[in-house]
Length: 87
Image 1 (cartoon, rainbow, N blue to C red):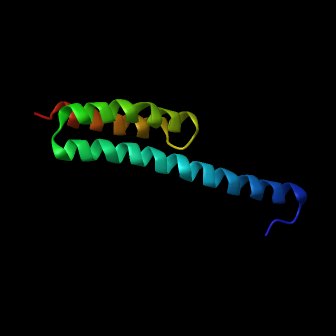
Image 2 (image 1 turned 60 degrees about the vertical axis):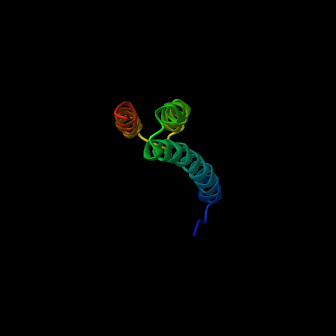
């Protein structure tokens, strides 16, 4: 348990950041799930629209420190390829 005032404050900050980052990660996953569902349904237009909506969210997660840059790039690349391969 935190004893010094500084460590108590750091614990509070850590808890706050945890909840914010959890919400951001959840929001990004929701956008990615919408793309996955559109791909599964086979609707290319819906998949492209969902991908366009998901891209800025994913990159915002990178700037906020939720995801690593390469992880986000890899996800975008794989999703783009799958959307492009739709009939």
